[in-house]
Length: 433
Image 1 (cartoon, one colour):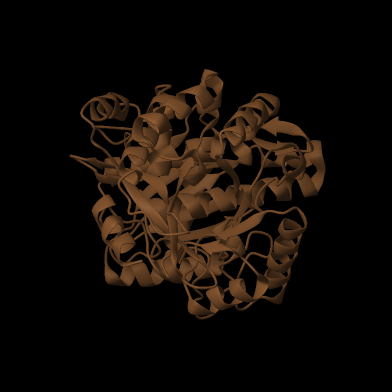
Image 2 (cartoon, one colour):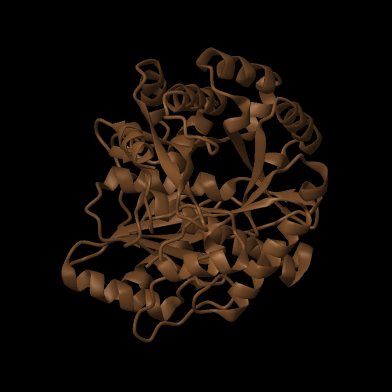
């Protein structure tokens, strides 16, 4: 249950839309009955200070953005069967029935902590809230309420230990072996050995279901830990200041693969690449990308660069200038994760945008919640008024797709038609289009 599955007696947190404590305890009861369960409590201990400085509205803004980051991270790393819930105040719960090793659970916590600690904007000011993480493994026959009590206890212990960010509820030492810090060396080796895999998330036309292209995603098949998804991969890269190197590696590989995609008359397949703040910080991003396009004979008009508002925080003007250079080459620009967190309408005016990409949280409940549908309708209307296309992600049901069609969305991606697939699988899919 990651925020969309409803259990009997489900109680939702009104602010974040996540399951509340009662639903979390019920999920943990069921998980404990069936076997292994592992959990972590994520605590924002500086939230009261945010409320004092910016008012309750500022604190609510932070909670909504953190909830989104949690949902996205857990969906990518643990899948749809994991639990994300709000435990109350500035505390959130993540739990999984997957039989993950103790060290993997710890470095997932470290990576999640870094994802949450990325800067966010409240009232025009940048904030960074580093969470504290209490970890545990469930005991045989332990109730959900008892498990939550143990997590609460260790969260309180963490508050009294200045500088400590991760602590196991059994009071033992952190996991021995490879943590996120020691994975940095593994990542550098993987980059040199070309072991970072590129998967493709197909995108389809809403009205016809015809394949439109794909978004390139990174995966790392680690010899010890197995598949490491993009959020954790970039968190590891960030520790060692290798984000730009990793991002460019993915871009080069994806463009080389996309150059071999079949040409379709009148509607060529497009490639979307995610760009980071570190890419822009290097200073020659547009020039480098142009040469990679030329090297692979990939037309700039078939490339879309996806940026998030998080990317723009570091230096908005420098990012805007680089995007204008890309647009002059014929490259399209899409604003990703729009409608979540600190959506800034300044970007809609100042950037050479071609599309808005709606976050999956804006799609998940449009079948059942009239307010969610109204928000979707308003966003599509605004995009139309600005001459922008609309891309929806996280589409999982035919009902969601029908609503997107009624509202006039252009493209969609999600498990309804396809999750991320290999280059070979995408080539086969595009051959059928």
